Image (cartoon, rainbow, N blue to C red):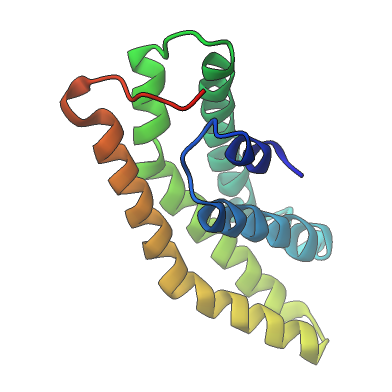
Length: 154
């Protein structure tokens, strides 16, 4: 179980389990079924570097935010703003990079079942990406509305 899933189960974040599961599943597929399985296709790609940068910035901010919450300290305004604003840029970079890398892996695999699975996953990005993005935009609005501190469950 990774930290995002644990945080949801421990109520450090109000993200629904389905949303968290979707993010964890998509990242796991990207890491193991794409990047690990097809390093000759993914590693040299500029999309791979952009994806890693987007993931790294997002995770550093996310886990800093959770660390402050876990310590019972008030979340600094800048950290809250970063947590709920940088995704506006990082999410499209990450999701676009993930999609491109999966598409490239689809082109080089010879396995029909793997091709079918990749096509299915690529199709899911169509409805899934706007759904996840709009959820995050709503969370941003709730959290940053009026500059008031969001009351997190402890």
